[in-house]
Length: 205
Image 1 (spheres, helix red, strand yellow):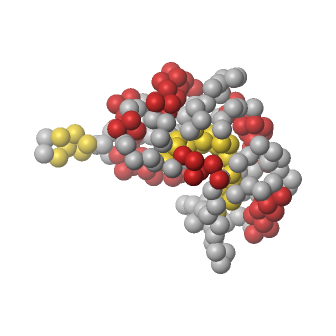
Image 2 (cartoon, one colour):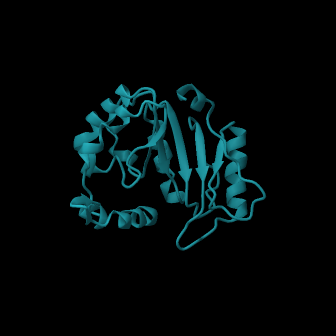
């Protein structure tokens, strides 16, 4: 949420040439909707990877009223790949039908978050991924069955780097399951960073 709060401060309202810019609710970091933007992907003709609601959590109860129309838009814009990252997979309705072009991920920072991967497995999302960012402790043995992709990153502002053996343990487990790995640029101390994607990525682009 530190990143989201920082981004929100870029939305400070101002008037230029008699036109209003920014959003006070965004600036105040108050949950709200911008329904006028919901149809924007339909007007982007070039196939793109679009992050949905990265300033908030799509499956927070505040946004339940738009779930159906949000995913209907994803179905209509079938040429795009939509990426969702949530910390609240428990709010996903049982049997919820995700469009094939939606990648669903959960955020896991510590052992107490591992239950989110179990919830992720219960969904019918075509591509399931886990973001270990920031990785805050050694997770030990992680059940990665059904996971298509993982992302590993550090904490920023303040910068806190995960121990190398925590990262290496996750990477070895991914290799055992043939899961592609994406290492975020905020990871320090590595001669090179893996930027791998699921093979399915090419089928949407």
